Amino acid sequence: MNKKIFIFPVSLIIILILAACSWQAQTPDISDPNTISTIAMQTVQAMMTEQAFSTLVAEATQIAPLPTDASPNSTETAILPTAVVEEPTRTSVAVTNTPVPTQALPTKTPTPSSYDKVNFEKDVTIPDGTIVESGSKFTKTWRLKNSGSTVWTTSYDLVFVSGNAMGAPAAIDISKAVNPGETVDLSIEFTAPEKAGSYKGYWMLRSDSGKLFGVGSNADQSFWVSVVVDDYKTDDVPTVKYDYDFTAKICSATWDGSFDKIAYPCDSDKFNSNSWVAVDMSPKFENDYQDDERSIIMHLDGKKDSWIQGFYPEVEINGEHFISIIGCVNGNSSCDAVISLDIKVDGSIKNLGKWTESYDKKITSIDVDLSAYNGKKVQLILGISNRSETTSNIFWLAPRLDK
Image 1 (tube, helix red, strand yellow):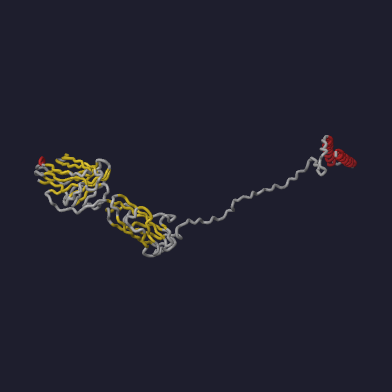
Image 2 (cartoon, rainbow, N blue to C red; image 1 turned 90 degrees about the vertical axis):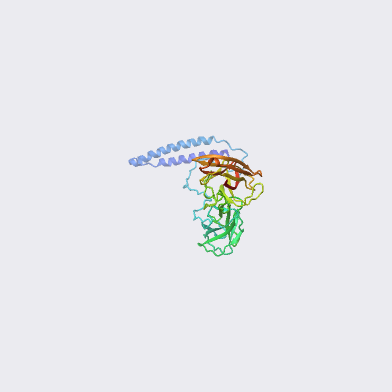
C-alpha cells in the first residue's frame, strides 16, 4: 500500500514534465506583441505550477502509513482540492399550516327557536316606577315587535321567568298570530303586594317548541314590570263634627316634613312610601282596642329625626282646649316617635307639649288648655318625628278644639 501512494505523485510529476517539454518544443513567433504577452503569462503559470507540484511532492512523502489491519474492502479517500460547483441558490419554501386567504364564512349568532326575537316598543300602561296601592289590582301592557323571522302563533306564550310575579299567572297564551315586523300589545293583570316597597318581575316569550326568547342582540334578555307599592290607604274625609275638627280640615292644612313630598287624602298623587297622612274612620290601637271615631294617621318611614308637621288654618281662641288621644297604630311594633303640638302666635312658634310613643300597649290622652291665647288668632301645628331609623304609624283620635 505504501508503494502505491509513493508511485502516484511521482507519475504525476513525470506527466507534467513531459507536458512542459512539449510546450517548450513549439517555437513561438516573438515578433508578435500579442505572442510576447501570451508567453509571459504562460511562463508565470508554469512557475506557479512547478511550485505547486513541488509542494505536493513534499506533502506526499510525509503521508503516514495506513493501519495494517485496515479492512480489505475499505476505500481510500484522497484529500485533494476539489472544485466546488455552486448550484443556483434554491429558495426553500417552508411547508406551514398557514391557510391560503379565503373569504371568511359568516359566524351565525345562535338565537333561540329559529330567529325568534322581540323588540320592546313601549310601556302602554304602568311605566317603570309607577306607585300603586298595596293590595290593589293593576294591568300592565307591553307593546312588542316581532323582530325575528318566524311567526308568533297562538301557541306562543308570555311567561314569567324571575323576580316577583305579583299574583300573575305563570304563563298566558298570545291571543293572535304576530308576523315578522308586526307589533302586538300584551297585557297581564297583577296584584300589588301588601307590604310597601319596590317590586320587579321579569318576563319573556316562549315558542311553540318550548324555547324562551326576548329582547337584546341575542334575544336572551327579559322585559319587565316595575312598581312601587305604597301602603297608603285613606278613608274619605268626613264632614265637620266639632267646632274645629282637625280630621275634617286635613286637606286645609299645609303639610311639611323632612321628605320632598307628603301624601294626603286630597292630593292628586296620594302615594308616597316614606311620609303621608291619612284618615281612618275606625282606627285600631296598639292595645288592640278598635274605635269607631274619626282619626288622623301619620306615617314616617325614615331616618332618625325625620319628621312631619301639619300647619292648620288660623282660628281665634275663646277658652278652647285641644283634645285628642294619641298612640301607635295596631301592628306597628317598630313604632318609636315623639308627638308634638305647637302653636304659632304673632309669627312665633311655641311648643305646647311633647309625648313619646312606642309600641308598649299604652295610649295617651291629651287635653291642653288654650285660654292663655283668648282673643288671639293662632295656628295649631300637629307633628311627629322618629326617634330612631324606623317606621312609625301614629294615630290622633278625634283631634279637635272643644270648650
